[in-house]
Length: 154
Image (cartoon, rainbow, N blue to C red; front, side):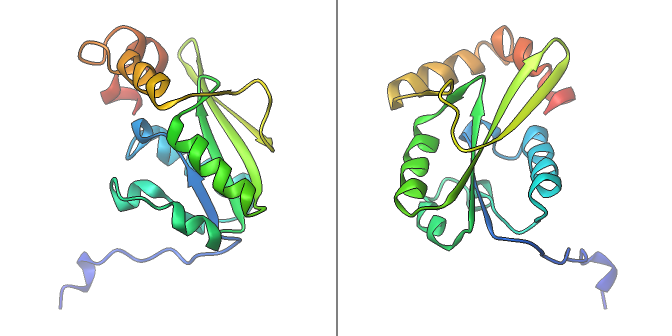
C-alpha cells in the first residue's frame, strides 16, 4: 500500500570491507564521502560500518571481512582504530589506510595500501585529548579550522 515510502535497496557487490573509523566521524558528511571513495577505489559497496551499530562493539565482525580499512585523522589513529588494526593484523586481513586531512578549504583523502609509518598510534588518553581539541568550544577553533563549519562541511 505504501510501497512508495520504501527505499529501494542498493544491490551489494564486491568484497566485504570493514571500515574502522574514529567515532568523531560517525554519521557525518565526511563518512559518506569516505564510503563513496572506498567504493570507487575497492570496487565494493559491501561495507561493515560501525556507525550503523551505534556505540556497540563491532570488532567481532572483522573476521568476516576480506578487506580492512583504517581511517586516520590528521595522521593519527585513535585508540579504537588501533585496537581494531591489531585484530585485523592477527587475522591476516588485507589492510588499507585512509588518512583524512585538511588543506585550506579542502578536505584531502590519502588512500594507501598497508599502514604507513608516518601515522601516529594514539593511546586512549591521547585520543581523548585529540577529541577535546576537535570539540573545542561549540565547534570553533581547531574543529572549524580543520573541518570547517559543521553545518556546511559535515
